[in-house]
Length: 354
Image 1: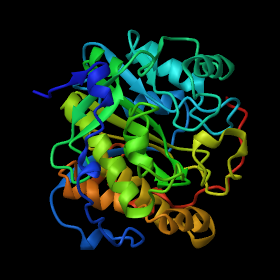
Image 2: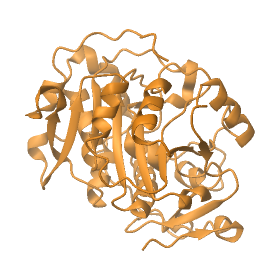
Image 3: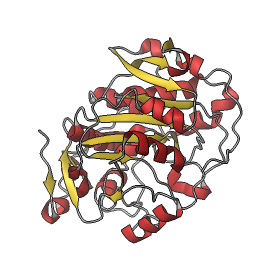
């Protein structure tokens, strides 16, 4: 059973480990670990090249066996008119077919912008067309703290208090680059996206008592974000699953909206798994397996930010497996490699899908 502390008193007690001791970050977050050098058991990751509502549904239905009760669907709904988010009509089709009672969940941002306050956030949701189902801004009223089991930076993480209303979590993630994290997969979607906008995100991003809001970076940032993710997925236990959409992959996060860097990495497909490390690792492996021209910008972003530490730290915390069987849903469930998934990709062009 996961213990949850909610309410005003709990949210003001910022007595996480950062306040009493300074852990030492890990290393080598800029170094890719080839598959043959990894150890441990293999998880299962499903893959389709079908970038459409039908492909999204097909991928999700491979991994939804334990999604039940009141379901939260965590996705990045984007800044106003952002061009790269998962198309809303795909999400609508998925939810109408498989999650008719589901609720999209978000939290307010730590930076000032179009989603900083709940009022601004709801306006942005309207602009971006997220009006076909309920959207719960989980920190609209309050925060809760969830325990971080085995963490070195945190004993607990502050999340939106509404999280405790849900029985299951579907992490529906637009895989892309990220200014701080190097890449944004399921780990970033949950670790940053479920932390509340004022306390949890501050714990992850900022050293108290100095003026730089974004001073925490590289390995330390990856570890803090990952511990935040662990708090949430431990709360949901076996009732959480992951879908990553490798489409419109700018090196910029969807937080940057229309200011995001132009996309140069080819579209790939959609992956799904019940293992968070395996799915993010598979996406990174596919990027790595691309040609130098195709992956140059994305690898530079990942390596310069030491983003591989997301993967190695998830493994250290026992959050999943970095070895996996990749199942090709387009070819009868044949097992393929990341290199095969990355083969013969077409140069990126923007589609008309919104």
